[in-house]
Amino acid sequence: MIKLSPSQFATANSVLAALTRGRAFCFVSSQPGFGLTTCIENIKSRLSNPMFTIADHPELAGLDMFAQLYHHLNIDLEFQAKNKLPGFAAEIVSLREISTIFVDDIDMFLCGESAKRRTVQQLKCILTALPTVNIVISGRHEEAWEMFELFECLPHCVEAFTLDGFQDFNEYKVFFDSILAENSKTKLTDVSLKALYLDTKGNLGDTFLRLFHPAYLYKG
Image (tube, rainbow, N blue to C red):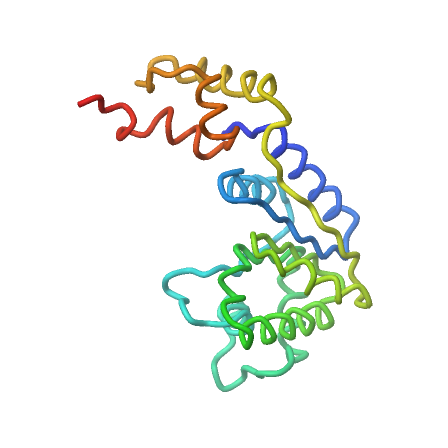
């Protein structure tokens, strides 16, 4: 099991608590390198009820949010409404007992003004048609939360969560000391954690890269 940083663990627990309460619309944001993908995957692994993910998969490239939702529900093209989620789609979600829909990397659906407007409208339709289904959005788009704040009039409880880095060097050191102890037989870059902390500004992903990536182990 992947070890989570303190911020990843706290954020995952907070989101899971919101999902347990039900009718949640959660937006989880993070700067690059803080481990957002790992955090979201941990949340998914801890859910016992059925769920599915909308994301920018290569085989679904170019499809908007509605089209990907229809793909997951196995709804043929001729039955796909463009401006609303049809009642039979909501019935399929209910019959499958889907508790949560994840939208990973919302940024991929917000490229351009028309895409932003379409995504916001489609999300509103999904939230309206599926009032009891939890929705979890993750991403880094700076304007995303401002757009999603408009959803407060809907039946879901809107909550925002921010995945941060380490509070200080001590927290960083404790975490990576445990990582190094678990990987004592693995080749590592010969550099102090203090130097890495200063060089990476405590960035989780950048530190892993500099510790374990072969490019940093090569000294030629």
